[in-house]
Length: 290
Image (cartoon, rainbow, N blue to C red; front, side, top):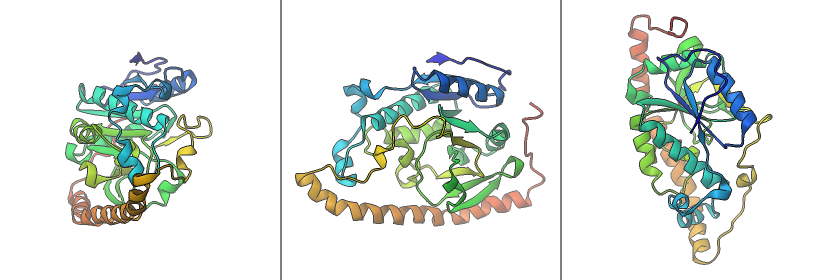
């Protein structure tokens, strides 16, 4: 752990603490995050991410390579495994100390409304914010999602119908961490993809709309790289035979499950909206008074 630097304002004790997953050598990224999180009034720290070149057997032990090759036709890159391990360790670190917490990667841009959004989320019952991911790419505006609860400044807590990647910013409770960590004991799936699979984690696919935190991809290109998105098949023999069967089956299964969970939650989501509509004027923000 490396202590925060460049604090500009006193942190608000009412806001959850934050941990920034970052390579130790990423000085510019860390300075940029320190400035933003300080302005947001967040108490934060840096977590030294695992370098891909320094993965050891204890790190690789959580990765189910055979199942990954059968289902996807290729292995995760070392940098992807390092990212998976880094987030797992960061979640363990925060869940051991805090009931609710934030985790960021070091290439995030925060909207000025971010603290107010956090206050609104903290007003919700813990079971309704076990995991809330923050997206910000252009596709976020086009993703099918259902509004559940109004938040501060015209933002909404929404339920996603898709399985987007990205784990650059998320709010999590200890209970949510326990559910994720059970899956991370041995997995073939990157964390960001897993977070969009409620049938696997038991966690709803929730986000905030419009965007409040996004990646600065122009200034800070991904440390993992884009080669992981290239379509290829690297398996042979028996694994390749199984992959030929598993690929279409996996796609069909995901389509069925994500739609089942999205539409299956409709009565609950509508009830939440109805309760808000019938309730007295709710407190939209406490940030200015904190």
